[in-house]
Image (cartoon, rainbow, N blue to C red; front, side, top):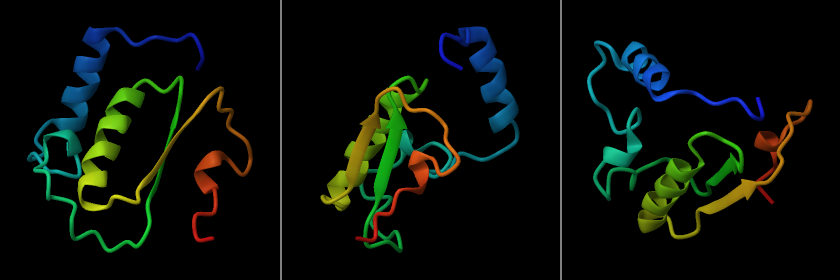
Length: 96
């Protein structure tokens, strides 16, 4: 998908389709959630990955900052030139 762009009208239309009739929810719109909203997640560790060419990479970074308020050890990584492979970066082992 490198080089492809989504115009604002297309994003607005896709957003309406995605959200239409669905009540607002912190898991659907995490950037609008309260700072302590995610404090009771049933996890010990979290790894958040985003491709450097990903459309919403800046929003992923903001979400990580929110998570780090209640989980300071959340690990975030932006992967440059990420390519989809059979095992993919999203399958990385974080249980080490």
